[in-house]
Length: 124
Image (cartoon, rainbow, N blue to C red; front, top):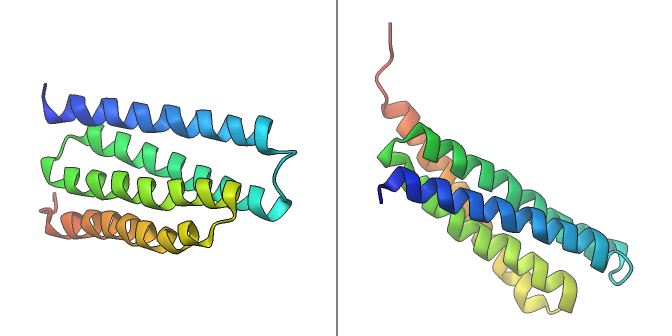
């Protein structure tokens, strides 16, 4: 299986889980969580879905150098969004302390895209 196909599948899986977790939050947690905790959960879903689309764009673009960005996004989603999902449901602040680490991975992913863009040769 080639890298492009793998990243398309990963993007699809991450997008699928983002929608499923968003629906779970809207339908099952809406009455169980405070508005503050529901907002935290929704932030996790938002970042989860935005970065699933970014991974899909990278996969369709097919530039192997951008796959490092996609990997940073996957790690970032796992650490950032997952920690917010768990924190919102448990209130355990240990999980909230993991969130910024995930945010750093997301930022690294975007920075790698910037650096790859700067290295590209301009077309006249």
